[in-house]
Amino acid sequence: MLSEKTRKVDVCLSPLMIDLFDLKEKTVVVIDVFRATTAMCVFLKHHGDKVIPVSSLDQAEFLKKKLDNNKYTFAAERNGKIVESFDFGNSPVSYDGKNFRNKSLVITTTNGTKAIEKSKKAGHGVLIASFLNVGSVVRSLAKNFNNDVLVFCSGWKGRFCIEDTLLAGMIVNKLLDYNFKYESDSAAMSFNIYESNKLNLMSAVEKSAYMNRLNLVNDIRYCMQIDTMSLVPSWKNLKFEDKFDFYGFLAV
Image (cartoon, rainbow, N blue to C red; front, top):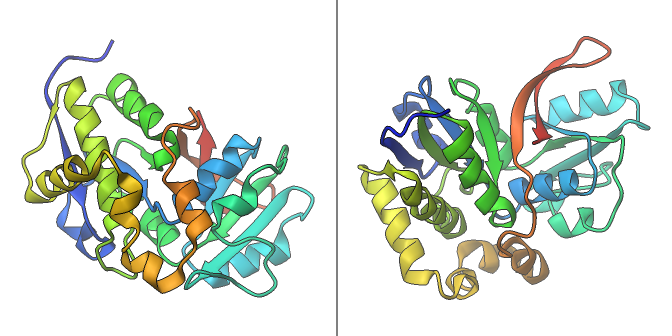
């Protein structure tokens, strides 16, 4: 049984800041609301076996050539668009309604998979969160772990993103009910931004930089749904049949 000690939750607002945090004693929760971590959750919800995020396009293209296309689906996104020769990008809508049973997803994205790569030093696991599974992620952090938590916002090319900050603030808010506390300004700011907008989260992102840059209204509305699934993607070290060794996420 986990102890009732008070644990801390912190927020990293950008991958450019992650080296300021000691990850050895933390569980890291990676979020990329628009759209990578949302898409990964949708893939797993639709019976996908595992998600293998890779940070570079070269890695994705290499695996696309080497792995069995009957067992793997390959996705690549850069600057909001699907990379040529890949069937999927990071749009969660494109994964919705499909059956990925017995398939694994190899995916690289502009921001989210790079943040996951930077999370490797987490001493107590890495989880993936979106608005779609936020309640389940929070309950898992509270009940299945016994250490401090860092919510890691993927942002956009190193910059702050309002949508990731809203989700970070929501996670902080919910963890307070489980005997967590926060001390940093980044956690306080995320909490306050969420509290100020929680009655209408969609309104808070309608004038976001992401909306202005790509105007993907259907994707954004999809990503802002709350608690539509109960799975928690959790990091595992996966050995492939041809001896490749990559980080991967399984739904638990």
